[in-house]
Length: 188
Image 1 (spheres, rainbow, N blue to C red):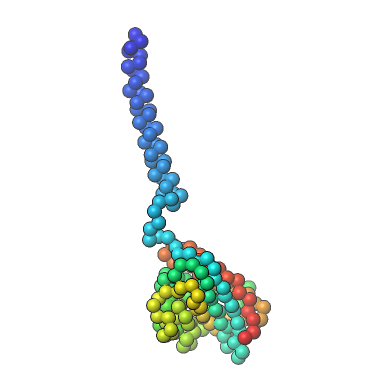
Image 2 (image 1 turned 135 degrees about the horizontal axis):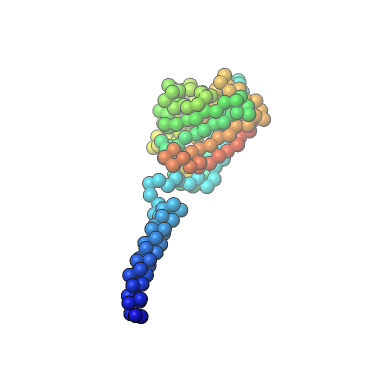
């Protein structure tokens, strides 16, 4: 009798152990995927470890200039960047620049480069440096040490000394925010 009982439970124990091992293996694979411990692929965002910015008002009051300096971190592919400007506290508007670099620093037509409120100056050389192909930086990248500029049209969003805007640079393919700067307007 003792032999029959142990023979009956052996297949049950084996099945339970097999299911437990399968659950552990699948759980381990899921956690690697869910927690992103797998190998880094094309879906990872570049890193900007340090940046700086400045917002200054033109002497004639026609526009404000935003300067952003990429001080340290990975070289950025400009075509993958979006620059989001929130001037909600100053003029109640927000806009986004995308599909950069802009040829010859010209954001015309605005519909090709601007989403949201069109607060950006679209005249010649309105964007310079890595985000605007101004015949200085035409390789489509933004490296540490380089400064990009763009202008905000005062007719669309009038800024005064002391007003603040928030500028965020995002990596479009991943949605990652690379840097964010709160800038205070100052006279030139």
